[in-house]
Length: 286
Image (cartoon, helix red, strand yellow):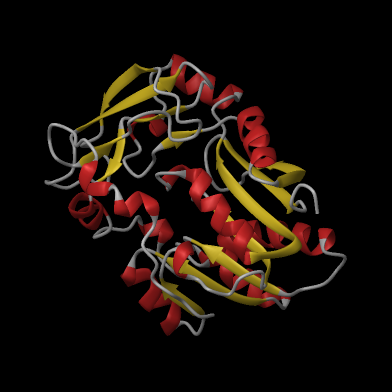
């Protein structure tokens, strides 16, 4: 897997953007999905009890709602210094090797479903934000030529030490265009400042008819509603997240981004989580 380091449009305009009062976030000028500027405050919560919180990160989070498309998102994404501070810590269950057997069992169902949809064939798989490494390792166990990327240098080093292809990189840095059979964004999309930009990169890297695995919390479940009613929903204080999706909205977005969902399932790994396998559709007109 080779890499380049192009500057993205978001990076190029970072200096021109508005910053939150505490200096930790670059504020969204509009909805990060549809770009509409008619957005309103939804709720504000404390987040300084989160296990990854440390001084230098915001103590409260403000969530917004887009009046045009209904998307729910934080007021902004982290400034580089705050993001660096956040990445200094890792949740124990997201460390390579953490609860490896349970991770292997949950990942086997995901990888097996992808193999079935691929007609029994294994090709090249890249796992984005691999965390514990369970999905990456299980894809390799099934016979995929598997590699992973992650922002946390510590987990990259540990995964390499365990004998897997791991890189500290982001999607725009990967130059193997159209070379991957499967790309997984396992509980990653909600962490990305601009999901549409990430999905353009996924399309660039996937071969024609390639598969995308995406999972994230589903904000339209009985579990989510019950947690909200009891004022115990941990996702409102999740300092690593920028977005909340529900199934209907994510399915619609996948269509806009050029993917056709082919399988839905419920996550065994996270509260109220959903898992979707989708196939890359041809370019319109091709």
